Amino acid sequence: MSFLGRKWHGQFEGEVVTDHAEYPLRGRLPGCRIKHRMKRNWLKMYDKAGWILRVETVINDPEEFRVRRRVRRRGRRRTEWVPLRKSVAYLFRYRDVSLQSNAQYLNALAQVEDPTAGLRGLDTITTRKRSTKALNPVARPDCQLFTALMSGEYAVHGFANRDLRSKLAATVVRLNDDPRRQSAQVSRLLHRLHVYGLVAKIPRSRRWRVTAFGQRIMSTSVKLRQWQFPANWPSCMTPSKLVRKNRRPNEGRSYAPFSGGPSTSPLRLVTPAIACATNSKLL
Image (cartoon, rainbow, N blue to C red; front, side):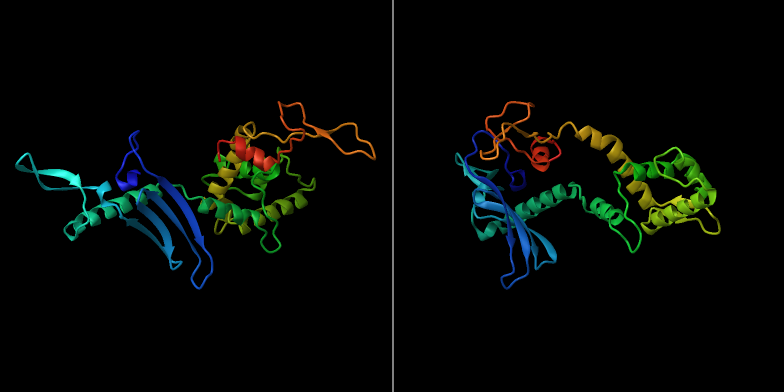
């Protein structure tokens, strides 16, 4: 409502609707449209010809807006804000209202966080490349590897093969007992990280450094495993455990819900995805 120049109050009588539509292939390019409608006026956004994101304001009931003009009140002429009328003389006000509405809507969209970059980075490290194994950002071995690579002592001069070996000795990453094989194993691990762009070789040396992309990916992975995942774990309800009772070969099967809370139905079966969606505050 604020985009169309109105504020919510108890005396408002009208309909405020937001709907979304997708256009299939029917002799035209596929696309989608979002329309925010207040009474007979609406603000819509759509992809024109599949290439341009376009925002439009449609005014069918101009009396919802106001224009400042000269009017006669009690025999005297004065300038006041009065309801806008349908007239060619007020096209300038139509233009001002539409531009202001479009600008406010685009400014609101500019503050919306776009997860595309984060999802693209996650797909980069979790997708297998050639013969290189993909990384698991929430697995314990990979997370401990990321923690070792982001150690502050390597921020200035980087790290070498032996430095990483000493760090991984205290983790769950399995290293060979033979020093030569251990060095080769860490070299293959560095090559794996280099393929995904997390580390880069320092020129004319045998040392490595963490890239800017690697800093973002690895710090996000460590934060996800150590803080966000444990914090969101209690908010997701676990599925009810079904217990069979009195099962006989020739009789029907009956199930009783696990004693975790009251249930009104004889069978309470909740999938993890649905349970998490209904209880988590993230959705």
